[in-house]
Structure formats: C-alpha cells, structure tokens
Image 1 (cartoon, one colour):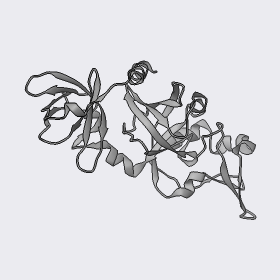
Image 2 (cartoon, rainbow, N blue to C red; image 1 turned 60 degrees about the vertical axis):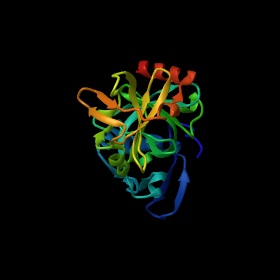
Image 3 (spheres, rainbow, N blue to C red; image 1 turned 180 degrees about the vertical axis):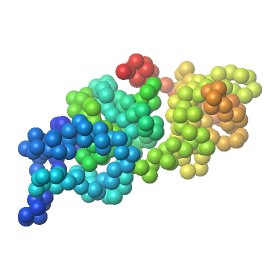
Image 4 (cartoon, rainbow, N blue to C red; image 1 turned 90 degrees about the vertical axis):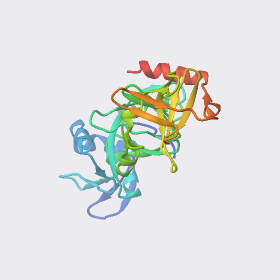
Length: 267
C-alpha cells in the first residue's frame, strides 16, 4: 500500500439516480463533505462511539451522495478508537500515539494491522513495523510510512484497532497489561533489581514479559518456574532466573537508548 499523500483520503461515490459507482478524490467534494461527515463535531461523535462497523455507509442527509470508505468493503469487523497521532518522531517515519483517556492501552506486534483516519469510516489499514511504549502513549513505526514528511501527514489522525483484538491484547497471563507494564522486576533470592517490564509478547505457549535492564532486553517466560510473585499494587515482580535466561538477553543498541530518551520527553 502506498502512503497517504495528503490530508484528504479518497472514497467511493454512488449516485442515487444511476447507481453507477466511481472512485474519485475527496478533494473535489471536501467543502461539501466537511459539513456532513468530517466536521469536528461529527468526528468527536464517531470517536465517542465504542464501536463502528467498517461496512456501514455514512448517509448524507439532504444529498444524493452516499459516502463509502474504501476500507468499509474489507469486512464487517468493528473498530475501536484508541487514540491519535500527536507528533512525528525521528527521520524514518516514527509517530507518537497518545492514548484516548477512555480507551484501553493495547500492545502492538510487528506485522499487526491498525487503522488510521479522521474517523472509522475513513480509516485506512497500516502495518506496524515497530512499537515502543512511552509515558501516556506509544511510539510506532509503520511499514507504509518511511519519512518524517509522510509521518507529519498523519498528525491528528485517529488510530483504530479491531474490536475483537482488544480483549486478546488486554489479557496478559491473568493480569491486565497496565498492571504489568512498568513493574520493577526483582530476582527472588538476591533481591537484585533487574529492571522494568517494557513489553509483553502474547505467544501461543505462554506470554513473555520483556524486562529492560541497564544494558539489555531480557525476555522472561510467564511460567510458574520463572515468575514467582506478582504484586501489581506495589509495582513489583519477583522472578527466578533459570539457567540460560541471561544468555538470551538482547543487548541494547545506541538508537534504542535515544528512542527511549526522546519518548520520555515527548509531549
């Protein structure tokens, strides 16, 4: 898929008289559609709705036009609004996603699909290239967005995920994601602080909690032999390091440290 080339997405138009469908650029009808489908009040109303069906057209009262989002034809799955892109990050197309106050803070895996647009009706699919959690949001790279200029075109766009994915993404071995992310991880026997949980991998066999130490990222399998005690209220997790676990830690790269530092200060 090619990146969005401007703030005005394309759509399909169907006339009431001829029923002939043709694809055209929203730019020629932007002034008309702004008052009907893309006004700020309409966008807020759509975002306030917990779910919106992708195959439900938006009927424009008092007009012969019925607007259909191109993504609506891809299925009947519901979408959940989770936040918006508020700033570009770096030179390679990174974006800062700021969570909506009433939306679940979900996790994104590489290759996962999200939907981006001013509303669910106009949202287009994008593929997650990388993601990293930061305070009050998440830094995200998209396969279709590779430059800062392309990223800036998506600023203020809403981000949506499929409703059926929300429940799965919120479950992390019996604890909510927000209860685990950010917890301090402590070695059970020595009391040595290893680091904090910065990522969660939801895998078929068992989940994995990724701990950021001073020098590496340590993946810890969520099994009883490793995770000994979880105290979400105290933000503390006690673990037992089985032989070989430290050997699979991934050393930090210089750009990882720069990314984390900028993410912490990002507002």
